[in-house]
Image 1 (cartoon, rainbow, N blue to C red):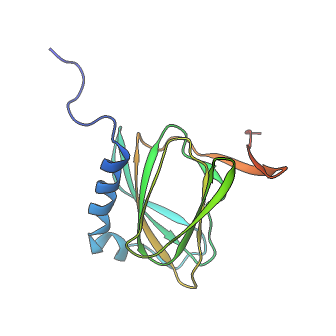
Image 2: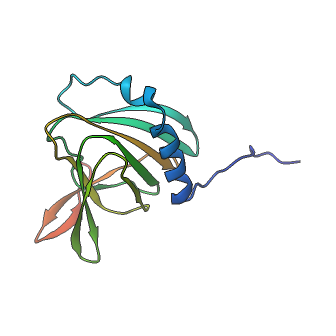
Length: 151
């Protein structure tokens, strides 16, 4: 007899991307979000102990700031707008521009910063596994990212 629930407990980045693309294909998710605020917001679409799916709205110029997702891997699909994703990899910053239909996966612990580069709202769909329970912010010290310790 098993005491655990059946189903996927650890989603791969490829599986997360498929989930994000599935939700991005639903026009209702992007059209139902409020676009009147001036701060980046996230709205849950689905949640289990092992998977979270969100739709996020990005006012012009909004940014995440440098951060990682702790133990969670993630995938993002751009539904509307133009975003820039900066990654800290191999000791340097790599920049990638993202437009509608573009997708991006992020490994657990990967440092990055996402910014709305356009003049209009951007909308993205995100999938994380396990659920996103921590986000570590970073600041730049001597040209390198350093984790910000809680006060």
